Amino acid sequence: MAKADYELDPKQYQLLKAVGQAYDGTATVYLAKFLPSQSFVAVSRTNLDAVHEGFSVLQQEFYLMRLMQHENILAFHQAFITDNELWVVMPLMDLGSARDILDHTFPDGMPEMAIAHIIRDILMALDYIHRMGYVHRSLNASHILLSKAGKVALAGLRTAVGMIKDGKWLRAVHDFPKQAVKTLPWLAPEVLEQNLLGYDTKSDIYSIGITACELANGCVPFCDMVPMKMLLEKINGTTPKLLDSSTLLNDVHQDGSAVSGSISNDGEASGRKQSDQNPFTRLFSPQFHQFIEDCLRQEPADRPSASALLNHPFLKQVKKRTSEALAPFLQSLTSLTEMQAEEEQGAVEGQDGDLVEKFKCMDMGESWVFD
Image (cartoon, rainbow, N blue to C red; front, side, top):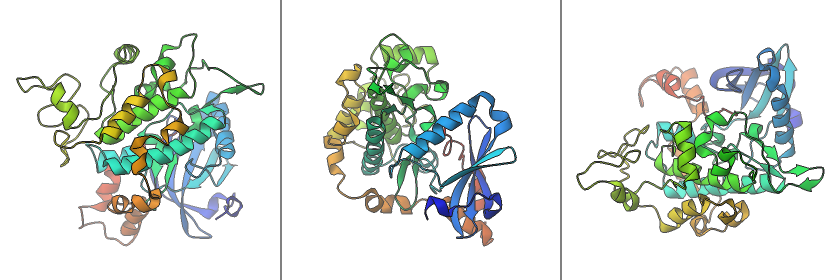
């Protein structure tokens, strides 16, 4: 449907289930149905009385969402104000975020081929954003949304900053993201340093490397560190790695204990759950390891651009459209609309346990967080 087909009347949208929050809890995101077409959408309702100084940030985000016209960037169908609420109607990414999929299905990380397709699509979105003169500044698995149809979309434009001023490209920007406390593990060293050199689009490339590690390992690098230690580690050049048999054996002491912050004998890293996929026995390709190394280079000038990364050997294995290649991977996952259909039919027990409890246990808060 075209954007113009979605009406500006809240009565035309049936809100079915709250699936997340945004804007520091001032907005709630719902699985909803657009009644005229009976199609599923996502609807965000923001309490404008609670936003206060953040209203300008909302305006900036909607400006960018309207400006950025790319198939791999989350768009919105309509936005309107009713009473004291801002309603935003968006396409429903019915599998939620990559972070949500990791938490509930792949706690030890996704298969390499799936990661390659997801990263390829996100790099295409990022290359577009950079060409438009912006730095995203909030790349992570929670801002990568997926649908069961195989669509991958990048969200999180709220923190994007422009690289163009008075019609001229800036060599660097110095603005520190206001919501950075939630994204510290993904931010590049030059962003965290806040020095006179500033940062540019290459800071997003570092975040791509951290996000790729997150997708592969299931856990976020540096997530178990206090901010000051994290800053020191990044400035000193500590580089996260993919957790597989080629890297973990080097991190284990001869007595069988694991290096702090790495992984324990039972294959469980801090903040990670157990799964059938054992990091000690799997092996990622040399090209994937090189991709991570290239993205996480200490000097921004040494990192490839998003455009260059699209030709990286790691992505040479991506030969099909994401919707085709990820079909077997995605079909095993249960979408929000499928859960809703089961609930409406009264089939709340049986296969895989109580679907109502399954719905409650799905922490969708990170899936639709745009902070």
